[in-house]
Length: 336
Image 1 (tube, rainbow, N blue to C red):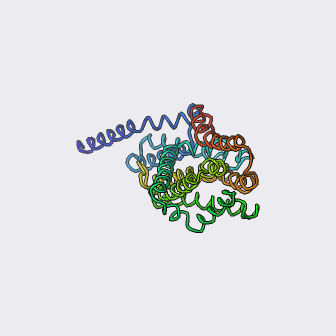
Image 2 (tube, rainbow, N blue to C red):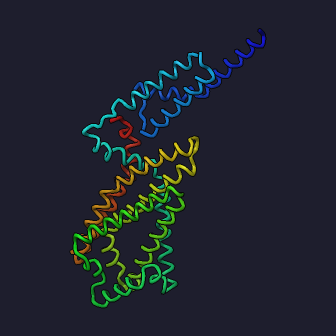
Image 3 (cartoon, rainbow, N blue to C red):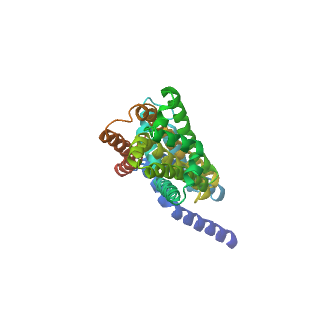
């Protein structure tokens, strides 16, 4: 009899310790359910996984405890809260672009910084390699492209490559290429963040070598102001897609307290939202390159500069500033 009471007391002590260790988390979930706290979609997923794990543990070790009833009640309430609006609303698309994409990006700002650094370093490598090795540009861009561009420069039309295709064919070709490069940066993250970094580095070196080639010919500003009419969006999309790829890679390489499968699923969902958010960027960049860059290369420098600055400003607003603002304001955490 003494042993039986001691065992019961030991089990009660374990239950108390378990409750104390998780009490703050349960209270946090209760605050969300009562409307006193907001949560992102990923936080809701975390809550749902954690509360069900705790419920399973309690059912296993404390099946007759009031704790099981308490956790079961929270789990059911959370389930209803998550799935009560499962039917799509008419405002779903608006909500996606206004809140979900920016907040997915907010959670990937660290990866965005890494992606940007890799790309900038690669551009610098491309520039300096071209400075100290005359054959580097041909190695990176290919003899045919370099020879064609040199011929265009001799004919007084250095950007003539943009006039060599029909508008419609050029639009679809550019759009497909932009999507291909960005998708590679995104998809290679499933192998590792390093592979995404490799794609970014490869493209950054090409950009650096390309720009220095024109600088060397005394055409740096003409090249920059022409190419960045579309390049401001195009290159930004590659960097952002690289961030999405790194999110996937980091999610399974560094899962934290989650299983690799769970962490990968969460990271992939976040990254996919970012890639979908880039679709308008791909389209606008292709339109500018196919029609504006191709047909209006002689536009005033101030107009070119305005288009470039507006493009960069929009990218910074939507993918950097807006996510931070939404997080600070709490608006992005409201359920829709």
